[in-house]
Length: 420
Image (cartoon, rainbow, N blue to C red; front, side):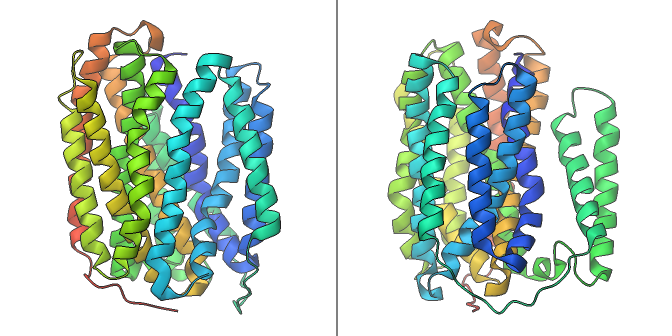
């Protein structure tokens, strides 16, 4: 595959997950969060199993899209189910444990994935994913709490759903493919125009797929903008460093995974601690501090060259892990604490959609840089100097991107208002 094509392994999953998270959140709020999550895990499991046998890249990417659909159903419900099961005064602690679980999985991924790929090839990754998601499905069937809420059933406007999917889909696809052809510019412009139409329509219709009154909530909106900019900035770290370590420095996938694990380990250890702290201290200040650490790490990575010490790289990863730990739990707690429990599903969906749209934006920026610096050539043939140049351009841009997120984060209220 070419360097540009490789990004679609990530983008095909992200685009669909970001696009469908909010509609599935609305469905979950109306018809129940448990069944949506269980179906999502099962779809994720089945599509991963099918990808073990992919004979070509076309089918592989199609199954990645189906995985994205399943992931959207999970993202739409996970935080909502978690927060709904505990009282408001424990929200920060609970979100901290939830974030730690995410990062424990993230820390296992690079190591297990690196060992499996090195020893057995890429198909073994999907054997592992199938097994883990099958266990998750069984646990969901047995253990998910059955919390009943008196939420009125409402029929969502079908036109609202169509406008949302088409406008956001065109916007993200146009952005992701901006440098590939002239048509992408028209697709992006059409997406922007339709997003404006969607917003105006949603303000008039009785039951839109996204209730824009949530966006009038200052803390909710600013917290989601912080999510978009922060994750858009840091998402490229693992992608860029993985390519740098293997293709520019000559490390195998196994060793690369062990080096990259330093970031999620720090996140997993600190997230529950920071989560408890956010129950007592201002979550917006803690989240802003976290974004400051992330920005510092991104600017550190901007100075990487072919002879950079591995200790320097690990130090940057540790600072990133510290930043994400300070950001994720308090920011998630603030988002979920700014809405009523009947809106937990849609709030969880918006939060995860913001994260994934940020990642799509990050990958789009990365695509532009890759096309300018490397071009559409097979990734294994890219010169090490070109890979380093790619990093030297990308990381300062993402550092500035993170700084914009800090500005949004600092505009929020210092004390979270509880709603139940």
